Amino acid sequence: MSGIIPILRLGDVLLTTVHVELRDAVAEAFQTDVLSAIERSRAAGLIIDISGLDMVDSYVARILAETGRMARLMGTETVLCGMRPEVSATLVRMGFPMGTVQTALDLDEGLALLKGANGG
Amino acid sequence: MSITTRERREMPVQSEDDVILVRRAVRALAEQTGFDSFASAALTTAASELTRNIWVHARKGVAILEAVENEARVGVRVTFHDEGPGIADVDRVLAGGYSTARSMGLGLSGSRRLVDDFSLQTTVGEGTTVEIVKWKSY
Image (cartoon, rainbow over all chains, first blue to last red; front, side, top):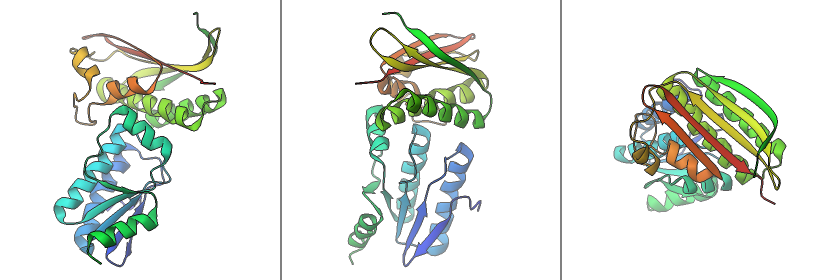
């Protein structure tokens, strides 16, 4: 575990905030760290807060979308929270498919979404 | 309309760190030019894609950042040049979805959608030059 991006546990939800400028190597380490944390914690949900990112290029977007798909395969729902309007506009204009990853405006909505998804 | 350069800066691209440095410099120039946050993010993202393309495919190249103006507007032009392998199937790559190991194949096609002017010159075995311009909107 590289631990550059902290992953916190809140009940049965894992919470991680990506606020640093992601270098490629950090982005890849982040992905494996998150999956290992899911395995260890057996968390039902994963929240990735990206409100601190003022730019998400296709490389970082792919890492985020893939992480969500991988987490789902393991049985954990992912919610991507706090995407800035500039980032959202840029990804859509580029034609980036975020796929099946759920998104929420902020942390509160993200937690509510996961609670709903887990029936309680 | 002719384009005049007001300021020019050449940056090497030969490591992953350079991708980050170029992206920061492009953002700074976009903000200095007076772009709004959406235009800055679009230009910075396009620059990130194209700089990464140099690093991933050619390993070595340059990014030339220019503050430009024409009779009507001010803007930012960035030229990405490498002497790498070149692109064999330009049409397919520009159509998007041409996937390499490190992207969704959106590097070129996506960048093109984020800027106002986009030109690509490439020769297999000789290299690639991509020029993008984004103008400030009033």
